[in-house]
Image (cartoon, rainbow, N blue to C red; front, top):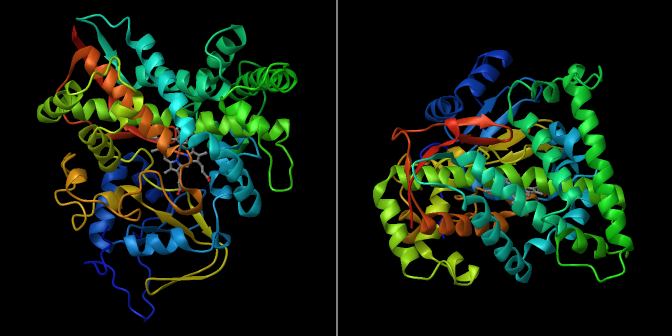
Length: 462
Ligand code: HEM
């Protein structure tokens, strides 16, 4: 693993360096950042380097950081120095105030400890079969000559996988209703127009079932009723609890022996659905785009997949394939699904790489800019999976899942799902892009997704 000790832009001087950044007003910077995030980030990096200040509407002033040494300091610093919950408030109406996303300090640590075990080691094996079966079910009706939108199909798969893994359910009326309500509510987040009421508090007025906020609140009420029914039924069932995430969380208890309350369970279930569903689907849509955009990548991948029996092998065998792993890593490098880690709001002044950063400022680690540093990734704008076969990157150079005390708890789950879904799709169908042109990321809910969703034409069934 290598971390650059010095770089072209920032050097670790003992003297105080002055923070600098674009001069536009908050409004101008917000508009620029939203309309053309790649240009905003790339041009400011060129001009100011790997530390620059930025002002966005509704946010305290922030420093955008893409220096691996600084990121190492942030990820390894005492977590009490930062607060992230306040910066994630936009998710509150969906996930509730007990969500991991909104907590800080001891409560955050405590909930994290309860939530992590279902996403590790042995548990992952059980999810492998769910992922393979769901993918087969969803893609089974693809017919040659037709086209599919990768983003929506992958979303269908990832929602079904996560619902199945979370609730241990894949059918039945309650499950169908939960699936429908979640699809409706999350699509509000993905659509920039309907999502405005989430950003602007004064629009959060219940003016009846047909008003945007009124409709959202009613759907959430109905979903909560179903979730609480499921939690109650699960707690009182006579047969032993299953291996799904809800069952594991019901049986979990904190250091004081306290189990999670029903409200905590509900909020964390929504958190997992919210954080895990669209992110994984978007990553898969990007992977399908790159694989079909660069013929050599597809050929190499097919060769590797043909070396095992994808239809009948153990999911773990697929997840160990080196080129498939490199393709997934490169997909998450070139356009990270989240361009930034969660904001870290400084609770005390911090000395970072010679900069004196005042309390109240946000440290924003820019995953996209780190992943595009030419000193770490030569030819950074080129999709080149081989770079992940040639060398290893430190967690401060490659960070699609963030890091430190907020590192994504679903990272292993998401990587596993990406590999299995891609292996199943590619070994079942021959596909091609409907339009062979470069695709850029656009904002979609929390994620940076491929514009147009990636239309693929089904050429033949293999
Ligand atoms: C490709 C898919 C995914 C990507 C790129 C991704 C990325 C991220 C990133 C960048 C963070 C913020 C980390 C930080 O601030 O340092 C995060 C946090 C989180 N992710 Fe993921 N994620 C993905 C999938 C998932 C899945 C599948 C789940 C759950 C099943 C999940 C659950 C979470 C949770 C609960 C957090 C909050 C952690 C905390 O606040 O302590 N994510 N994710």
